[in-house]
Length: 218
Image 1 (cartoon, rainbow, N blue to C red):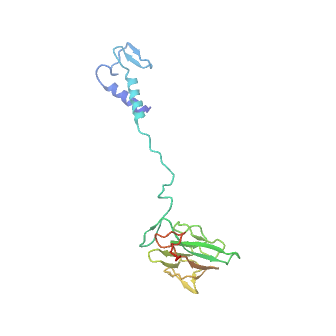
Image 2: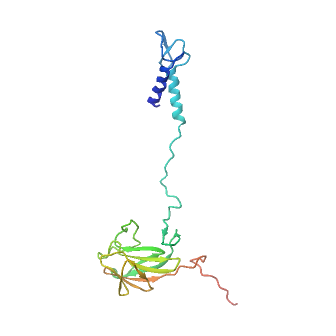
Image 3: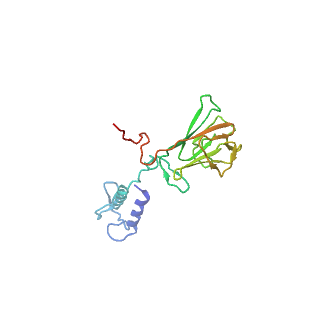
């Protein structure tokens, strides 16, 4: 029960005129079952009436809607937006980079459609996750270079991300404007030598795990 609301209603009864109000309480009184003072000619206790009104208003007030912290289906997969291209809800595999610089068994990293940030920090300065994370090389910048695949054009590009030690592709230094990334390219970043290989995704409508059936002569 809200105390202020109750006494506001009682104050209204006190200021009102006529029988059944609290403006003039006779000397001879009686008490209601709840113990409130009442005039002998009152048929209802104004205190109890005010209390019932406040309780009823509180009971009928809708409860605040519960806030759900569960992710929705649409937010389960964060899309990648490319310049002038459609959203990629599920990013297809379009290539790999690998290196034997730090381990004799090699290290293999997938390259997906869209932007692939490479470096030794877990996130980029803009807060995006680092797709190709290599912590073995202290000479790599946190975000060293970027590999980009554009599905609309089928083009692979690479650009330096203003790294400290620069990025060299097939013996030529590149800048933040970037250049086309050829198949079997050698990428030198810091002290790490990466090899890039393209993987062509299947055409739209064709299952990735099944080749199109062809008829054979009996």
